[in-house]
Length: 106
Length: 149
Image (cartoon, rainbow over all chains, first blue to last red; front, side, top):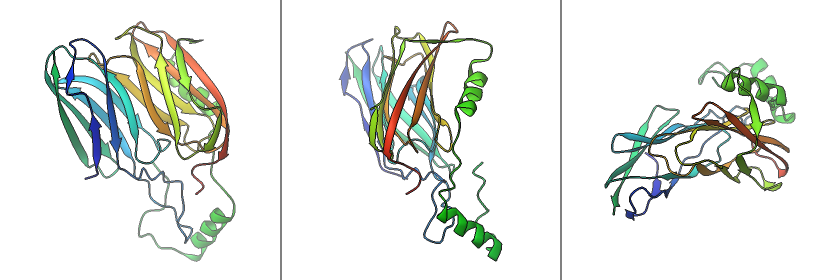
């Protein structure tokens, strides 16, 4: 489990786009670096991230080692009714973590 | 995928020698514009890519390649963009990210922080729902490179 900050407005206007801000505290070890012994440090990154609103897909992203450590991401979403926005991401160890936030549409 | 020796593998003299050589020489294999062109071709198939509509916002002079703020936006109405793809021509791995926009996505714009290994050209490709492709590229100068540490 890593620390995740998911920032969405509590209340949004129906059909009006709003920003979803995400910060994942993850080392995003690229697999290109070597340690003091000269041995390669194994890769450890967040591979895939999916954002859904209730059951509808909002946004999906494949990440590569070229994403900086502690990935920060801003994207946009729009909703017609109140519901739950969830972010699900998978890392190199196959660990799946989900973060949710309730959003009210007015 | 990474091509690393398996963990816990026998670390022989030969491997240590190779490893030592690896630390002395910055032997980081960089991708090439050709490799990026191949990836883009695989992405677009037989279609053609036009300049414009996509706006790749990156600083032209990067002080620290470990975190470079990047904003990509597409000049298109909501729902018109299928996906966005970013490539860095001289990174060890040229792919940076692939993003897809679902039916509930809002404005076609994403903002994130990327790593850049050296001075190079970064390319953004947008795939529209109507099947057209648009691109933008930024040539930038990196003073402190990522990846080498």
